[in-house]
Length: 146
Image 1 (spheres, rainbow, N blue to C red):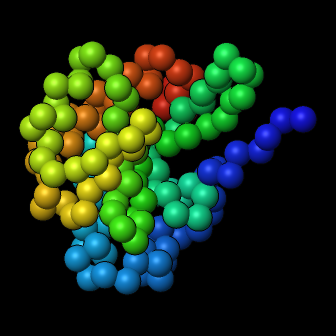
Image 2: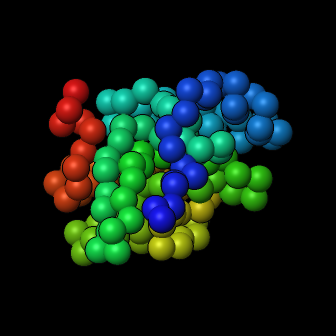
């Protein structure tokens, strides 16, 4: 039986989500700034994905296991402990950028930051653009359909 993805695009309002979910003034300000920046960089309006992820654009992935689904090209979640930034495809071409990003932690799928002032926004823009480029070239991209 196929497993249904929990993180799918919803019709929830992004502004309502931030104003009701985020309880820190700086994180609210940073959230709206990230929305402005990621909208500009991606060319897409923000959409809610699942209950807590704000995503921009869309692509379709399919793993060797047969599992497949849709995900935002780039996005973030203003989690309580830190922002989760979904902006990095680990390729040899962009790993070097992390050295100049600023203060962050990283996992396989995302970069964690406390606040926007902890990182270099110019490097974040490059990471977002290289990730969008990589996903567009290597996956079925919703941007091709529009």
